[in-house]
Every structure is written in structure tokens, then in C-alpha cells.
Image (tube, rainbow, N blue to C red; front, side, top):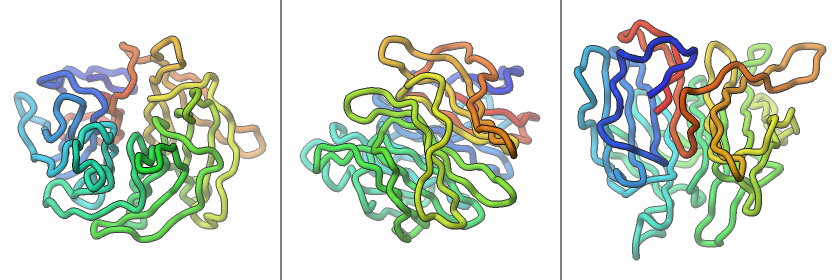
Length: 287
């Protein structure tokens, strides 16, 4: 478990077991609660940590086995979406395409298969945007973008310019308007460095933005203090530890700026941002 900015993370205990391809979500509370769900060897398990606890506790049991899934906060719950096809045996088709609310257990079908997708919570609109991923029924990577509420599908947004999975995404504000960002990932043959933006106020098409300094897949993204950050990933030969911030200033070309490095190189990990008042910090949580 690491934090960014790199102040002490000793108040957050390590996970009780190793996890990969899991999700990490912060419920602001009170009390603030970190929730980890799924993972390659922990496919139905959700555990939580709240400030003042001695360690992680069981939080919920997922209805479906899930890893390489994605999750985002939706109100006071977490919307957990998609999974790898290999986790669902003979019934994988419905398993791949479902989303479920944690806690609460509400469940509905996704519009598209979404293994290794990316999700953004759009708090102003009370919805989650699900972006890209792998369509197992068609054995292909897709660039579909869908909006969901706690009860199901709300509608589609324009497809990405470039189909991708294992990518990073996040949202930030510019002049008071919400912008979605997607970067990196895997297109089926190689890692990507390309970045795309979608302005929700118009939502007519994704536009090209500054590429990452290197092509990487399996990186993660999150917003912090009005900025958009990405970290980690795999470039085809090396697991990465860099942390980059997307910089977009009036009158200047946009760019990615390296702002730090993680203590460990990471791939297929989870990252979330938030003000965790109970832990007296406002830091990025990485696990």
C-alpha cells in the first residue's frame, strides 16, 4: 500500500493477502472507508478498512467471480462492473456482462462485455461512465463508452478514437466543465501512448491530446486536487514506477509531467483518490 504525495502510509495496513487485477474504491462516509474487491485469487471477496481499525475486515461477497474488472463510486455504494471471461466457466457470458452494487447487491446487465475496461464516477451527474475493454463474445477489443446509474444503462457516449483495454482514465474540470481523459492501454498488438479527451458539455467526439512519454498498458489513473495523474504499467519489457500528471494550461501545449515514482513498480494494480479525513490525509491510495 502506497500513498501519493509520498507522505507516511503507516496508518493504512498492508492487504491481508496479495491481490492483482482487483479494484480499490473510497467511500467518503463518514467514516471514510477504503474497499478492495475481487482479484485473481480473491474473486468474490470485498474487504474494507476504516480509520481506527486494526486491520482490513470482510465487507461483502460478490455475486460473480471478478478480476480485471473495474469499479467506481456511485452515491454511497460501489458499482462493480465486468470481469475476465476465464473466471466464469460455462456461464461466463452473463458473468462477463453484469454489474452489481456493493453493498446492496442490485445487479443488471452491461451494454457491452467489459473486461479490462476503465470507469469514471461523474459525481455531478450521479452516474458512472464505462470506457473500452475486451468484448469476449466477439474476441475483440472495443472502444464503446456507456453511461450507467444504479439501476442500469442510461445511454452511450461517442466511441473512443482508438480501441483499447488495460488503459487508464479519469476526469478533471476545465473552466468549470467536466472533461474525461483516457490514456495508454493495449490495442491487441502493442501498448499505447495515445491520449484522448471528451468534453461532457458537448460530447460530440473524442479529441487527441498529448501522448504519454512511453507506451504502457496496465497503468492506473485518478484525480487529485483538480489534476489527473497516472502511474505504473508495463511497457513490453519493464514494469514501470513513474507517476505522471496531465498538464493543460491556457496558451500552452498540453503535456505529461513526471512528478514522482512509486516505491514499487506496479502492473494490474488499483489506485483511488480522496480525502480520508479519518486518516488525517488527502492522498492517492495505491494497493
